[in-house]
Length: 213
Figure 1 (cartoon, rainbow, N blue to C red):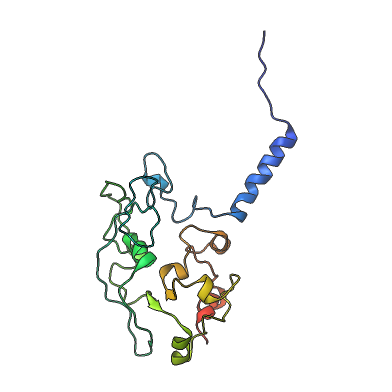
Figure 2: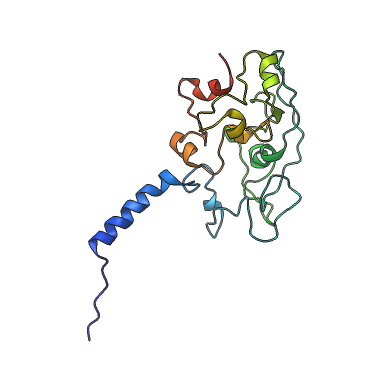
């Protein structure tokens, strides 16, 4: 008896294609972003570079199921005569970012592998220290805004993301790399599509959220 290949009804195909087209608009999409590192893995895994379901490094703070080698660099941090904040060594999520972006730890250094692919050029933002980069790991408070005179108070100023600067952009009151960049390319960053930034740079919008100019 001849077997006939099954064909999906046309309405099923159209419905499936429509659903797929809507996916990037509704949820985080690391695939295809700057943080899609799967080509560096023989098994084309996406999450394994930072996270693992088993045997995670629990000694690293602010890092759920962490799986990546962590930088131990000390950096020359940003300083300026006009800076009123006290800037310390990068902590939390910012140190995790620098564990690829200072160029001293391989991007594919995860699990037991030392890795072999190192960032260079513009991607290695911390390779020459942090003296020429926006300050991170400092407390951005209303009192700092008053003292500085050219910052918006974070507790009441809109982040343009639905709530205040304090709620949406700071981490325990601290300015970090993730205050501007969404490593998982959530909906806001996917819409901007610019270096995983959550707020567009057009018209200096990103800067003016915090800076009162």
